[in-house]
Amino acid sequence: MNAIRRLFLLLLLVLPRPAAADDGPAAAPDATRQAIAAALAEARARGCENPANTLDHILCAGVVRIGVRANYPGFGVASAAEDGGVSYKGYDVGVAQEIARRLGVRMEPIGVNPGNRIAMAAEGQVDMVVATMAHSVSRDKQVTFIRPHYYGSATAVIASAALHLPDLASLAGRTVCVPLGAASNGVLARHGARLMLFDQPQHLLDALRFGRCAVVTHDESFFVEAMSDPAFAAQFAQKFTFSPGPWGIGIAQQGSAELAHLLGLLVTDFHRSGLLVGLAARDGVPGGFLAEQARTWSRSDCILADGDPSPACMLKPIDDVDAPTSFAGRVAGGEAWLQQHLGLEIHFPMLKGQAALALFRDGIVNSLLLVFGAILATVGFALAFQYGLRHRWSEVRIAAGVLTMLLQSSPIVLLLILGYFITTALLTYDTGVAMGIAVVVIGLANGSFAGSAMADAARVLAAGGDPAQVPLRTVLRRSATQLTSFIANAARASAVASFIGTPELLTSLTEIASVTSERRTTFTLLLIFYLIIVMTVVGLSGLLTRWLTAPEKRA
Image (cartoon, rainbow, N blue to C red; front, side):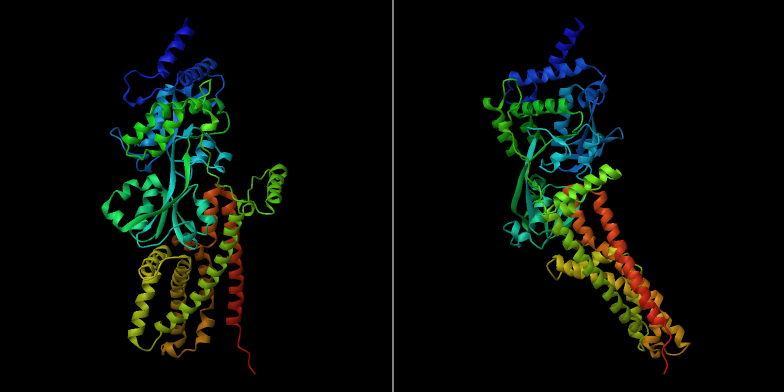
């Protein structure tokens, strides 16, 4: 009797409420809801003996941990609650709450972002993520996506109304500001765009308004609120959209087969009942995709006899797989050998995809050019500063001293931003301009220190006389150690240029990592690269120091 009573209570829990306002205009077929009830009853009957089964664990714990966004207007926004905690609201949050209600458990929202949401789901830190996550072929290798999809959106390109950007080809060579972890980033990279990553969506809009970014991309749904502002719409325009793709609920691939099946049934019910359309209307989210899906899942041919959604009616994931290089198989074989024989889990995504390899190669070349340019600029500005600081005219010395003080007291990142704003007021920002800004700023910063050291050496050598009369070769010999130190520092500082979108190796590897989600090997290679660069520069600087300080040959 207890078992019958428990099953009856479960049926009451999952069947629709007669007067619920959010159940929508149409009811799901009995077969789907019967399948939901059966899946829940079966899970309850299994009990709590297998905690590795995600569905069983959720039901036994009485709580489901769901990752949601905390800073995505309309979909997931966090704010301070009256009890001192954190409150979440938005379309995704509404979907998550409805899932918890239908499971009969309490929802525990956990804030996630594009950089960690896949890892948190794959590693079991959350039971599922409902977090604006586009379903792509490459992501299928990391987490299980629930189908039908609960939302969908294309990627929009937003820029100044005056810019002519008709298609993806027009973005080649341009710096495009993008959200971290977006599936569309790979598409942009393959079309030659240089990506500047932002970890918070709102920062994209701020960067666009203040001129830091000339072009930004994000889900089309994200820009709805901004484009409704007359002032914003008068200055910026949506140029085009690309990569339309569905969003999916993501769960771990291990121990989640029963949960995946149940969630697929629930989302089917949500679409057919109109619940998702209602949630979108409540939160001001565009509902075109949802209306189309509601019509699709209202068709009888999209529901199988056992209540499951028909695979023929499901949307396909975004095909974001990079075309393999000619040696991708050998690279994969090397990865497998390292794992099998040395226990090292190392991956080389920059060598297995053609677009990733092109980014990697260009990043190395650009980094070498940047380092070489920064060193030359450091030497050039050092000579200019030492000349100004020991000039006979006091006006020149004062001006050079003030500029030196300003440069030496300002962080390099602040100088890069200042250089960015000054340059973009005069020129259209692109990768060449970014490289030029980085070379000049790094050269100015390090050249001011080296030039000051040279001027100090000249004053010491003058012994109370006129520093301007001390020969440059003598000054160089006396200040050789300081000069070579700041040359090495210029090489180290070149990686900071990625902050303004300079297409050097850090930027390229970040773009690769934003698509592949591989981090450890990618950035370990970056560390090794800059270690080699800096060690080479230090070694050559040592030779230069010895040459400058060597005794002069006498006849």
